[in-house]
Image (cartoon, rainbow, N blue to C red; front, side):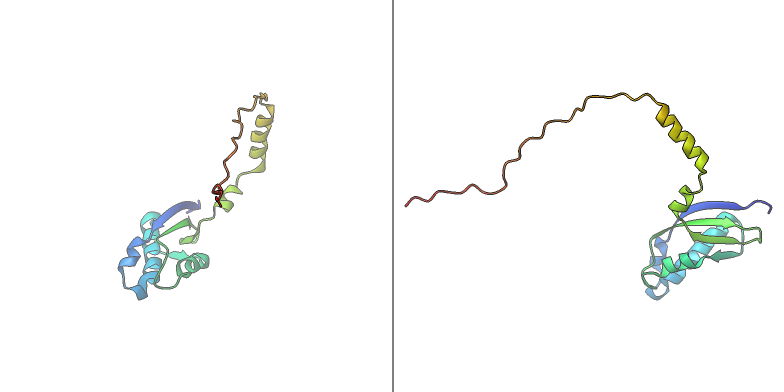
Length: 135
């Protein structure tokens, strides 16, 4: 195992609701381990503490229906299951590539188009019209 393998999955935990209410979060943790064994082909699974807190956040009776996780196979021979962060994924892109993209945007010729906004119509007042009383 010279290379480190990393994948992102969305695990459906809806079937955990079929078990007894006192065992649902425990069942959800076991479902995550089963999913990891099946998809990563490794017997040793370790669940990160943050993911466990996410499962147990609403108590034992109501685990989340779906969980987005990142599974990474380590050189030690086990799979580490952690919660997926979109922000961490976006920060991985190197700065050089983003500068190249921004340079291309600046080089593009700028065309000024006249604004095609429709003139705003005056809205009638929402108050009911006052009735004149005859005396």
